[in-house]
Length: 114
Length: 111
Image (tube, rainbow over all chains, first blue to last red):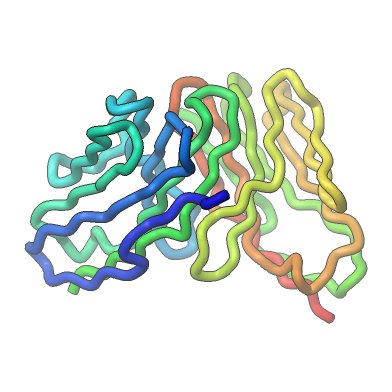
């Protein structure tokens, strides 16, 4: 079956602009995660959704970052007033539920803020 | 605060060699531990998931062990192949929903 997909694969934007990154999880997976990965580092947790609700958003770095999952499937990560320090690969993962199951990752969106 | 460390940071071995990658974590109260593989410019591929009640998991040439009390996990790769070249990441779930990753071990297997 289809895996986790993310669009766009690459996004270049100017400092101060607004961007949206999209994640389509595996069908039927109720848990969805967003991570950010900088060069040479492991992924850093941003936010976790169980169904439509954000069960843990403690990893969001500041209030410029926001994520939604209105129908419990597709999720959008939104970044306002982008800064050069936001440049990274943004990864999405899904799992059957939020407890004991494996996380399956998408290919990521590489965001470059110029 | 849970921290995950992976040693070595990089490793180069000749084809056919057996090798061990190490992962250590500071808080033994974890829910599970997962090993991933990441190819350059790609997302993560799950290799093995070990629940807190388990001691090891095996898949093909891969074997992962977990020693919660000492805060350690190892990933053993048997008969390494050039196609095994990638970055290997260890991740722990301390409870709740966060997953904490190590920085990874970059493996290069020479033909």
